[in-house]
Length: 276
Image (cartoon, rainbow, N blue to C red; front, side, top):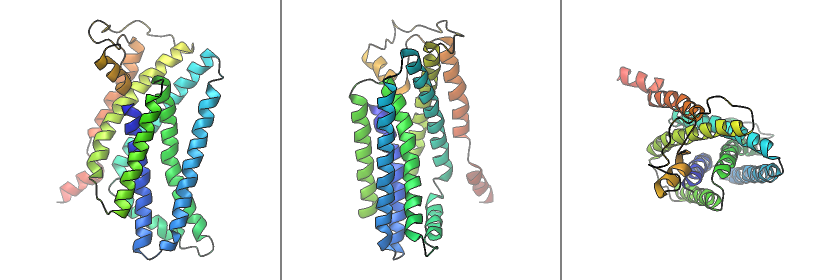
C-alpha cells in the first residue's frame, strides 16, 4: 500500500507542480483567460491514462499462465526504466523547470491562430507523461501486491498530491520540493531494484530464463515474508526470503550503479561551486 501511495504522491505532485506553475505564470502575466485551456489539457490527459490503465489491466487477465508471467516481466522492466528515468530527469531538471515552463508558455501563446490548442497540447503532454509513468508502475505494483490495499494507497497518494497542488496554487504554499524529490528518489531506486529482480523471476516462470536458479541464501527462519517486518519489506522493496542467484545478481547490477550515479554531483552544481 505504501509504495503505490508514495509513487502516486510523487508523480501526482510532479504533475500538480507543473500545472500550478503554468497556471500561476498565466495569472501573473495577465493571461488568466487561458486557464480553461490548462484545465482542459490536464483533465484530458488524466482521463486518457485512466482509460489506458483499465484497458490493459482488464485485457491481461485473459492471458494463459505463461503469457501472463511474460507480460508481468515486460511491465516490470518498463516500470524500472520509467522509474529510473523519472528519478534522474527530476534530479537534473528540478532547478530549471520553472524557467523552461515559462519559456514554453510564451512560445505556445506566440502563435495568434492556435494559441489555445498549443497550450492545451503542452499541458496535455506534460500531465500525460506523468500519468503514463504511473500506469506502468501501478500495473507492476498491483501484480506484486494483490488485493485492495494497493489501489487504495494509489488513490490516497493521488488525493494528497492534488491537495498539495491546490495549496501551492491557491494558498501560495511553498514546499521544500527539492528535499522531497531527493529522498523519495533514493527510495524509488530501491523499489526499482526490487522490480528488476521480480522481472527476472517472472521471465523464469514464463520459461524464458532458466540460468542461475539455485538459491543464493535462505532467510525464511530469520526474516520470513510471513512475518510483519518481512511482509513490509516484500511490499516496499520486493524482498524475497529465498531469492535465486539470478534475482540477487539483477538486483545488485541495477542498484549499485544507480546509487553511484545518484550520489555523483551534478555538472552544473560542481561548476557553480568552483566558480564561487
